[in-house]
Image 1 (cartoon, rainbow, N blue to C red):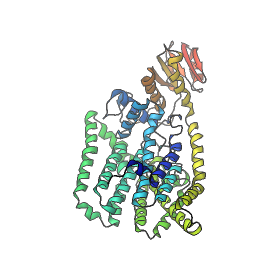
Image 2 (cartoon, rainbow, N blue to C red):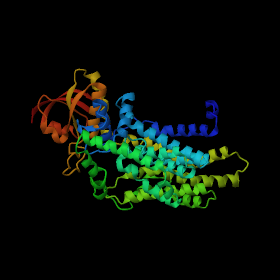
Image 3 (spheres, helix red, strand yellow):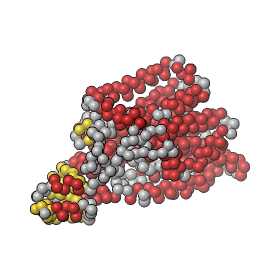
Image 4 (tube, one colour):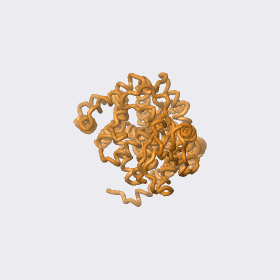
Length: 511
């Protein structure tokens, strides 16, 4: 019997779910498109998406008009960003919106997994708030950034929640959701989408169901779908632009795992220390007590959930900790699992306090009071970090976007010129083919494409290192205060237009 929409929407779990999304909307969406583009992966993805929106080549990502053989991840995230560009225009908001929506979807998975599978709405609320107030989740490379990892975290959460439900109830729908999660994860971030599989195998062995799984036809059907979809993409991509598979092996597979790339190295404790000191603040210290509380619970479903979460987070950390290349965001996809683990522990504490001190109160009233006491300070600190720290990053590029966007109005005839930028990276030594050079500036390269799409501007980019390549009578835009003296020492200049730190100049004779 189908439940009427009005009756369904009036249910308490749905009302609480809507409230959780409203609470999440502030840190996930506030000022999402106002902060500066980050130089490395975020700007690189923005370039890939901008070029795809222009050239309509869906299989091959491009940078500078050439196939991108450095960022070799499959293009699912890029496709979503292109869709957002078509809907919203080529802006920072469009680039970051898919990650924010993936975060909303992840919160939804945690909440409804808690309500429908673990039968505890309180756990759903607490887990969502733990994830939301973990500084690393809304921080670098995650839910407020146009990178892969928030979307990868959603797929991983779908994978382990669907697998848990499948072993509990055996419903075919959950197996197909698991298959979709594996395909989505691989099409988002290549081999990283499969790092959760060892945990699933270990959990199946723990539940003594590994042999049973091997006899089920849908397991092999799912494997076939995965090979056809993911393998098919890699084959078509290689055929469309040969050399791709060789680049994938170096960038995404054993090359990154066995050799240190771009000086990104660290100790075996790199990720544990990062979780403790930054990424899972302030909840890191609650992980151990939560595990102990769950192991003492009489409910076997909760204990089994804790086992799967522990295996997932533990094997993931073990795999990435043994990689030669270490980057902070590699541990990001386990944050939803850790949040559920802590949320389960907090729910145990809440139930004990409610029964001991407020047995006559309604559960909803007690839960609201508990949530307020536990999360008021972390939520406030989260909002402060978003409104202050986020806006202070890479501020040297803020004037470029505003100034370039205003040029069609202030100087409608000026459409061809050179934008001069500071040298962004001074630590790139002997880059390999397809890797960034000393003149690489992905932030301004993205703005170049965005201005071309939105404003019809055609300009070239040069770094301060390339000032000798300029010529008299060239029109130059410069906003970086450290670059202007270098230009003035090489050429006489005539100011055409100035606004704040940005100036449009006509070059005279060489000095």
